[in-house]
Image (cartoon, rainbow, N blue to C red):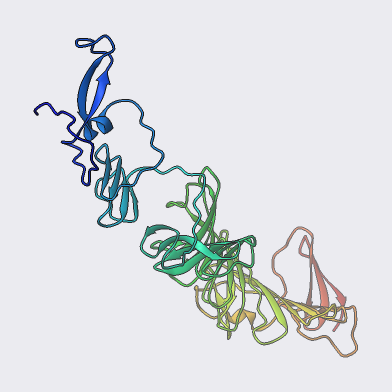
Length: 373
């Protein structure tokens, strides 16, 4: 560029920062004078020079670019980019953001203040309330009452709908310790509800502790058998043991071992296991207590031995052996039905009734008639 001399002072209507020059004195260059050498510099050279520049104010009508992508103002689209030279939103930040707080002047489920994607994020859903939207719909609410999933909370944690997750076994909700042991409630694919325990984070060793079927039967340590639709039973696992109680449309409560009621008949629960039944009829202290036993049979078959009680304690205090009803006006008696005379000896003795006579067989086999018929 040729030397530029000051020829006249006039107003400049258009400035070319790359070509128009300013005179300055380079005090470090004493080649022409002790006080420094006068030189020329353009506006671009001043702005690009090192050091700190202080401006009272500045107006930029075009784009602003700082270090390529550190800060970019896109004047054509009215966008600002931080960490990007091509901002795609009003403020586009490529990197981490640290702030004392974010305050949203206006937001909704479809336009959340903090969004992870369109219609999905966090917004102000009410007074002193934070809403979490999914697909432009309020999915979860947090307020001073508690956390509500699908519902405005009325408790500390309040959910409307199924809680938990699913696997091949069914839907479950788990409570676990830090070590992975704990319990879970499971609605299984067999429509039974289970309380299970697992020592290994509900892996293959999860064990059912309590099971509830759709008919209202409960199994403790075992899945309850197929009881009748009107029968409500408690079955306890452990070897061949089981306990059941059912009114079956009456006032009777029944507790069985190795047997269950199908709303019509008592059935064998196990093959080859002699079941027993205890029954209480009535709802107060005047109830009748009856005991039934069976020699055993095939699982699922009807127990015919339960047709008649083997022993009864009635409301008058009569103990009946082989009888189901005491004589008229009897109270606090022991009544024994005719039986089969024993043919073998036992340690102690045997009391029985034969042909109406009360007899006793001692341990040596001696039979004594205590009372004639």
